[in-house]
Length: 104
Image 1: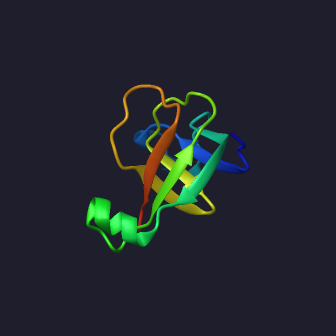
Image 2 (image 1 turned 135 degrees about the vertical axis):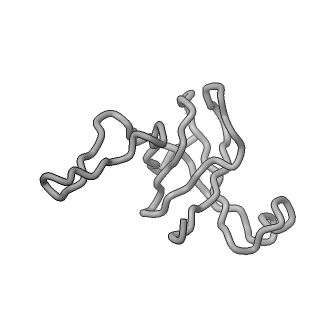
């Protein structure tokens, strides 16, 4: 399988950049993000409504060539996604991700 796309996997929800009130900036946490090659495509809105009953969100299907540690978020083309199903084991194969809206 060819992997023409790249996705950024984010591990651990508490490991997001933290605000430093002394400097007034956000400090990035080292080692929590990983650029990963993948094959990504969107599910049609018709299929999303049929499977999840949702017309508002977009669903992205991502396929990896190698096993990946379970992740909490992913960034693809500047948009943030979260896995639909909770994953505890290493991932090899397809993962469905739901787009996170800006209002959350």
